[in-house]
Image (cartoon, rainbow, N blue to C red):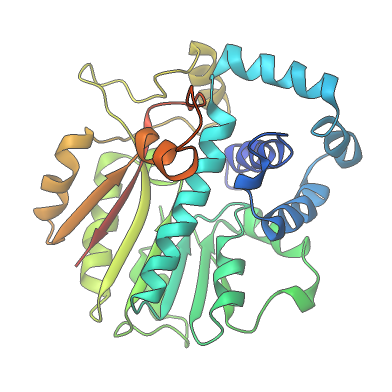
Length: 298
């Protein structure tokens, strides 16, 4: 992304999530508080927010937008909603298992940090993101909605290490059992930067670490993209300076992270989303393919 403007993909994901929230069949996948907070952000960042909020509720405009999605990346919208709900699910499991410090990196317009801070007042929660995206997000909330245990840290992690950013904050505790959520970020970093992130995270957190992240599947020909995506998607990402730069072959991820010291890694994707959220739906709903969730720990 360009440093002087909010992320285009963060805006796209926010719009997709709100579109999914008003789906007459699967809308329950998005929790009501997430819808409320996300609509507050949308009103702040979208040029014609009233028109957008009308369009995601109107039957005709929903049909037109669904037709567009089916052309460009079939199943993307429901994939976004399922991915986020699944991350919320495993984040809550990690917190129940003892994570007392929560760090969301590259949060974009996601509200998982806000939700985690409200639900866990004894835990310190940090959001690290580009200043432009973060500022726009913060101003969309009333000051009374931001709990005292949620700390926003503007930073460019391509120029500064996660260790430098966090150790400069007085509330950060490297000895606390920590949960990191880094969703929709690693694929925009080159391979070397991804490796540096995991190395730095492993060294920094000495009280236990669980890291939940998303990654793109790297195909055997080296291509990194949704399997379902139209070539125009890659062109649009390049135009926005937000093209995918890294990915993993799913079956090789655990071995890669083991070489960096991580003891256990699980991956989740389309089949797990369907089992979790659509177990009795036949035929199963269409979900975009090519992006996975990874969970690793030390």
